[in-house]
Image (cartoon, rainbow, N blue to C red):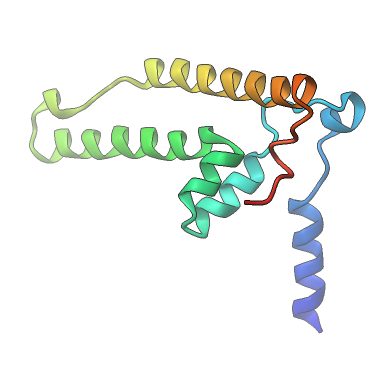
Amino acid sequence: MLNGWIGMLLYGIFHMPCIFHALTGLYCPGCGGTRAVKYLLQGQIGMSIRYHPIVVYAVLAAAAEMITWLLSRLLRNPRFFLGRGEQLAYLGAVIVAVNWIVKNVCLICLGVDLLSIPL
């Protein structure tokens, strides 16, 4: 019984509607992000990228920065550290913007709702 209530509570928390989408009918820059995290945690990388590519990109970028930082510390050689956090952040912003534009163009011009189409 308690598991059912916890499941319903978590379902309500993680399936909240997007206010921007509800008001405008358009996707916000973060639409699909929660589903992308869900699919990434389930090991479905393709589905995660489909819903929002920034999730996989952020994980890979953070992992690369952390691994190279750790290597530079362990080997005492700073040249192993990427140190590209600012560039990676700018590229992440571009990914979010392009994703947002493509999904809304498909929705407005083609009538294709990319987040509701099952594979």
